[in-house]
Amino acid sequence: MNTVKLNSQDVTPSKIVCIGRNYVEHIAELGNEMPDEMVVFNKPNSALSNELNAFHLEEALHYEGELCFLVKNGKFSAVAFGLDLTKRGLQSKLKGKGLPWERAKAFDGAAVLGNFVEIAVIDEHLILELTINDQLIQQGGVELMMYKPDDIFKELSTFITLEDGDVVMTGTPKGVGVVNKGDIFCGKVIQSGNVLVTSTWTAN
Image (cartoon, rainbow, N blue to C red; front, top):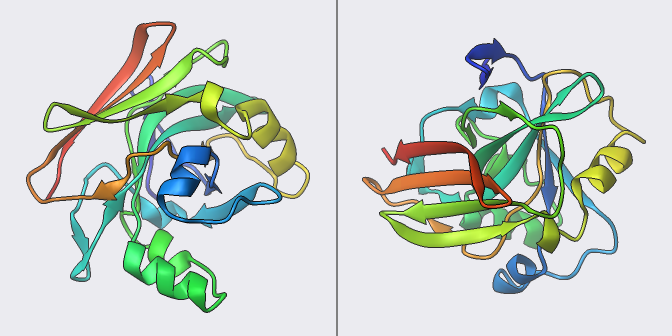
């Protein structure tokens, strides 16, 4: 089973639960409809990776930077920066046919997660920043979310058992795009101006 790091210790998520369409401007940039309720999909443990690839089975991948939370003691107890990788063309075909997204979202290496750090308070001052080749590409956080972390945890808990070690990816702000081989991605989680954790990858 694949693992993530929390305080230099390995943690094994049984699943990765993802929230889609959680930022209004991202919904607009992809031309999607505004959802009537929370959009939820899953990635298996096998999707976890600490390597960023530009292609999977010769298909180009798109990045989505996200605030990711680790479940511990029945709550969101740690945070990391993560990349939800997507086969955008395939996803569009599947959506057009009313089919599930797993082929486009749950493949091996589709969840690239940085190190987690413990967090005591999750508030509207918590944001992510993503730079690619030192250029700021994505920025956003709790304040811009349609469904806040507390709302997400409560809603998911009505139909999914969130076990210790599970990861919840909370959606992406505007600025998504193609992963290009050789690009240097740097993701930060920031709270009230303080950088909590930084993760860096070079795309293969």
